[in-house]
Image (tube, rainbow, N blue to C red; front, side, top):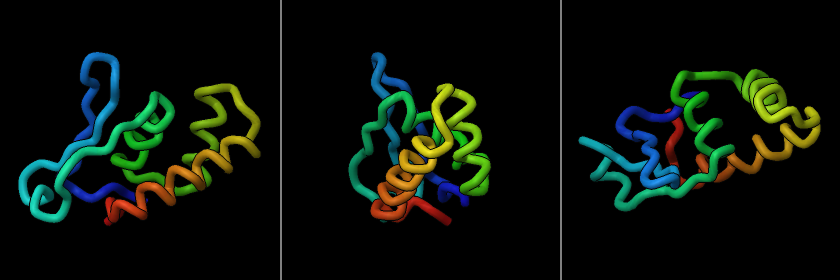
Length: 87
């Protein structure tokens, strides 16, 4: 899974936001606010990562159970799909 080109993550005064740049501004008008965990997942998805790797990375980074990581990843993926940000 990978985030489409043209979306960047920025830390603005302690808040994480995803904004479109270039051609992506035609398809998406606005920005998405993320918490620290969302920003972590977004960065991994920008690199292109499979769902299972994403779960493992989240569980390791935040020292949480794999079950909780799976739930959080599923919710985040649905949010990203809803915004049509996947390639």
